[in-house]
Image (cartoon, rainbow, N blue to C red):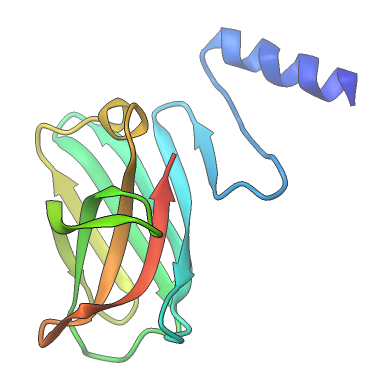
Length: 139
């Protein structure tokens, strides 16, 4: 166990950090972060969202299982946590369709999101924005 911790710290000082702690919802590698997306409101929509710094801005890739087919689901980054989210989106993302979405958020860096408290959430549909079906805390 001590060897594993020393190895991880060595990687952190070398510029690459892999975080794998039981019970956490994120794993970071360099300028990329993968968060666990958890189903809400009995939707069954679980998966991941990967956030990666690119020259164009923050790339966000959402992958969910259990999502409905051919239903555009609005997806956003909000201030707060999944348990206490600000209902006003901070950054809109591309709709999640068939459990998948890829977005570029211009002018945003991963360090901005990890320096504060943000959550990424998916709504049931464009007609039912009040129902969240999946959410992940960005840490």
